[in-house]
Amino acid sequence: MKRSLALLLALCLPLAAFAQALTPPPVAARAYYLLDTLSGQALAAQSAEDRFEPASLTKLMTAYLVFSAIRDRKLDPAATVPVSERAWKAGGSRMFIEPRKPVTVADLLRGMIVQSGNDATIALAEAVAGTEETFAQLMNREAKRLGLANSNFVNATGLPAPNHYATARDMAVLAAALIRDFPADYALYSQKEFTWNGITQANRNRLLWLDPTVDGVKTGFTEAAGYCLVASARRGERRLVSVVMGAQTDALRMSENLKLLNFGFLAYDTQRLYRKGEVVATPEIFKGTSATVKLGFDRDVWVTLPRERFEGLKANLTTVQPFVAPYSRGQKAGIMKLARDNAAVAEIAVVALEDVPAAGFLSRGWDSIRLLFK
Image (cartoon, rainbow, N blue to C red; front, side, top):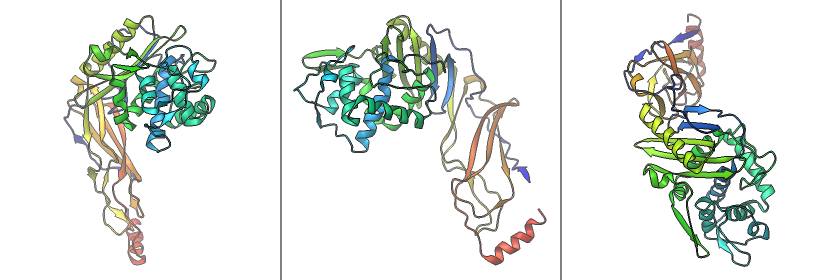
């Protein structure tokens, strides 16, 4: 029998919601996407699932795989890497590494992230996978795992190639994953300049100078791609990731990203409604070693809504009862539906917060009789 636990909690808390979007300012770009990383909600988007040439935004995936290799102790940041002829002869932006002059993984990372060096990027790909072609296979495998449904990589650098594409949404999701999974390594993206081989090059992400809350992420440019930028800023507890693809000038990719970030921070707020492990209900459970089972969330629950739409939020917990043991910790037990003014705001899975093993034969038998009258 399906019953609501009548948990109509008048939360009267500020909150932010995916279903109640505001109109963003006009953005001069082919595609854009604005993501709140706490709630995972998109706050603004245009042509977000259309495929475009990502140019050097590709290097976000390269960095993710290199950081993964370092974390898994397959690559040592202090280790020196030989420079292949292929890496040395890479076109486009360069770190200016040379054959016969080994360079450390740590320096190559700065050459790729700060200077956007294609030579450094190929050297890192070869250090991880042996060849850039094998590395591209790893990139696509990781893209699938991360849920990048409309991206495909054929090289590590983003140099133009057939069948090499990505979307604004995928680039936002990738950047958010990199920030979440490698917070210490992400600090490299805020470095404003790097010197190698006597040549100092500045980070092309000029938002690092224009807005002190911006701490990354990556620029990209080719004639076909136009000017691209993934940017991220943190203000208070909130972090936003903005993506602009196909702007006509370097100045526009900066101004349009900043426009999106300011819109997201000023027009929306993000609130934590529930904490991980917080108990929201203790319904009766049958045939178990306990009389009740604690229900709650396996993660902090954050929601983003326009600032003026936080009042009067209501939550309704719906479960399928009766609960019958055995029940496992983390097993889905219901849905918390959030609404305001009869409009759906969010639905969050509610799980069991504890194991409830099956009881002995006599207890199970007695509960079987009780269930006949439910």
